[in-house]
Length: 388
Image (tube, rainbow, N blue to C red; front, side, top):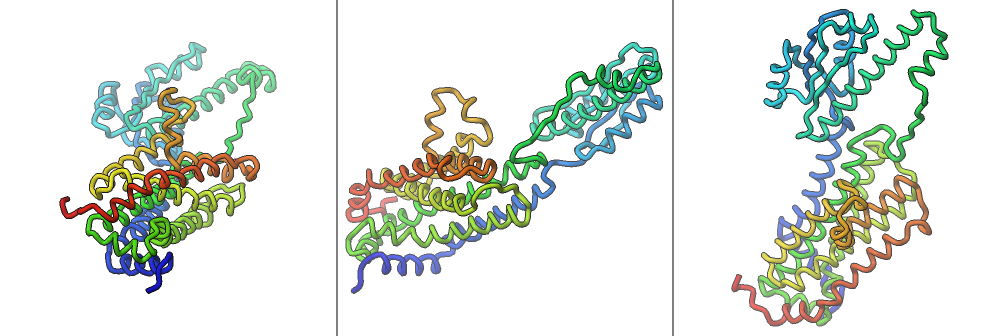
């Protein structure tokens, strides 16, 4: 009977076809994630967030402010309220994300040069919505304030150039690198979509090996490889590596061709790093099932490890701002290296010579299975997992 990697691959393909859970983990869940994140964030930023306005002045100027706020892309005036207390109540009920308070005699004070104040309140329990609303309200009010200031100065026969210099003494020329459109999907989906594919490769690796142990089919698995656990692992996981790589290609096509994500670097370098990240997570899966050769326990630890990586990777909270005691743990996740590669290659367009360290870090994960290879082989031969 033929033994080696090829028979193990054939055996694994038969298992994949016969058990729907493999199709679910390798194809259906990744496709759902890709389609979900490519559609629900298709606008890039939230729009038409409900806000309220308390206009105690009811003048032509206050109504102009109201129209400008309502015309913004992010905010939409949902409630016109008569008091601060009503606006506060609507915010506490989560009916609005912000409200603007225009005081009485606003227009009269403005024309008389008394420097009246407009107050706006935003809630940060919903961080994205609150910050987006605050940014747009602040931008509109500052722009209108500058315009009113300019009109008053020109009405006093002040030179236009001098008036502009007084209103804005320092000109700001800002450049947004990597995400010039401030598209939230560019920031979130670019990591979440491949990140969940990596997570599924981890879980699938643990499950594929763990079921061999649990149902006592590991001796047959080893026999198909000629008794070599290295060949058995390679033959078992290679089909999943290929499938998840195809899922990554599909996600890149969606992100770049359909959603128009910015890309500056070599896509082959990025794809190579992605495949290495899949292999690194598979290596982590082998290590977990080798240390805990019980399917239930290994899946629990693997899921906890994989999900925690989204927090420690650095794309939600920057690594340099983490506590010194926490920073070393970020290196335990291949996703950290993938995020670094994405920033270096896709966003900044760096070459291999300038971004080779994450590749070396990903290669280091391949060493993990070597530390438990004897323990895992012993589990494949000796343990009775019907006791679970």
